[in-house]
Image (cartoon, rainbow, N blue to C red):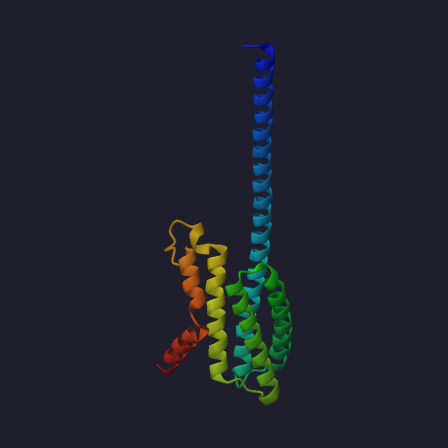
Length: 190
């Protein structure tokens, strides 16, 4: 082989090696970036979901107080419910950017139902039992979707893994909150 051919082959080999190492570097850089973004998104989702579920629990307590005829804490409960309506509305707006669509839709329904209950109480100083059932059923579906998004059941080996797959998540997303409401109504009659 001639010296020029050997030099050409070594040069081409070097160029190919450089291209391969550059491509691998870009690939792993891209993977590292997306991993960081995924972790950041998951962290923000976790914080927001925990805040939403905490507010939902408070809302259930305050609406229970408002439905009690003999409660001496109604004025305070109504004030606190108003603050919860405001916070939940803000969380729903934040959720539009970072929550999966199905969960965000349920959070919006929860916010709307809470607002509806507050308005109903302001107008009549009562809350219909069916409105409470609707609130609880929407809250239940929201909580189940939240658990699925966070992968709560996947984090432990002892879990039944009921909500561990995308198929299960879609099944939950397709359940109407009225299904839970119907169960509550049936149980209330018993």
